[in-house]
Amino acid sequence: MAKITTIIDIGSNSARMAIFQKTSRYGFHLIHELKSKVRISEGSYEHDSYLQPQAMARALNALKEFKKVSDSLKSRKLICVATSALRDAPNKAEFIAQVKKECGIAIKVIDGTKEAYYGALACANLLHEKSGVTIDIGGGSTELACIENGVIQTMVSLNLGSIRLKELFFDHNNMQEAYRYVRKYVKEHIKDIKAFCASSSFMNNLNVFGIGGSIRAYAKYEMDLESYAFNFLHGYELCVENILEHLETITHASNEWLLESGFEEGRIDSIRPGLLILQVILEELSAKKLIISGVGVREGAFLNDMLRYHHGKLPNDINPSVRSLQDIFLTSLDDSKTISKHTKTLFNLLKEPYDLEDSHLQALQVASKLYNIGANFNFYQAHKHSAYIALHSLHYGFGHKERYTIATLLESSHKKRPKIITQTLENLLPEHDALQILSFIFALSVALAKEKKITLEFRDYTLSIGIHALPLQQALKEIVLPRLEEYPRLGFIVNEI
Image (cartoon, rainbow, N blue to C red):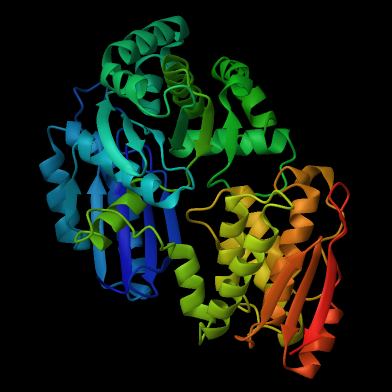
């Protein structure tokens, strides 16, 4: 696969371009993104799905600009897919030929099932939860797919989209008719999805993975409401029971209210029909949690190409964000491997006495892999730079709590334990005592990065470490002990062997 790959997705509402750079076989990251609100479907739903000249001209100009940017970044492969608006259009061949002639871009029109698959492929590989139902709300259609333990199952494409509903109902103030139509249509066309959910392992605790501009815009609104600590959308979680009333309010809101509430002007005319679709599907599926996905068709098309010989699935022990950071910032993994070994040994010693969870070990292991990624910026403040990079770059495969926990471990890997956590952040970290123990484990392991032969013993809530190096003995004694509130105090002894 090419080192730099461009993916273009021509949707009914927007055309989007994402450019990815591979750093190794499974490591990659986004290096550029562009969006143009071309509205290629504008006017088509009232003209038997025919693409209108003005809309095609807008799309063509956007694609010319996309190609120019792609070439400037020396992209060696370009994949362009088109969805609902083009697959419905009787005159799509005319537009495809014009784009090929003037831009040199070959458009591949994908059917609804393939569109659903691409969205599901992205979520299955790049979200932290591996079971649930994807909902990808576009301008012309909505795709759903069931994922169980990372395996994509039932898929369906609905002829319901935010722009389609806008032009057929909302532009004519037929709100009640829109509600009746959407509820009836959804009920009739997602029976296979409901049947799969009813027989699945997640039947009573259904996650819905929300894809698309309307859902992302809504998530930003919810983040502002709760003054959320971070501004990254991918992996943001919402309790469905708590948001249904909000969705109802927004779908009935005036344009003035939407603008005052922070929605972008370019999203005003499509947000209400888009969220009506979301509301109805969440209710029909009795979903428990809505998890926002920052990935979708573009990432799915990229993964489909990258993993074409791997059945569309990343290896279980590979995370592309972690691998990419290692590729970019680390010249050797020797220290990381030693730290990882020490964290596992210490974790197993302290797990039962301090009620540590298996997820805590995973955070320690990831932090071990990313130890010292910040050293290139400032050796003496490497732990702080490593923490910042991890928090803002562990985009794929981690929930927000996992990201912040890993970053906190990296930041406290020097000598000190984490400071008192503010109320806005405490839900994004393990319990106080667990975090104190975990950061102590990691700080010890980092200090022992060059030492492979050590002895460890834990007895009567006292940890004893035996090492040879005298300077290291002094360094270990300077590490601040955990400040525990509920569990017995941890003693620490350093012995020479």
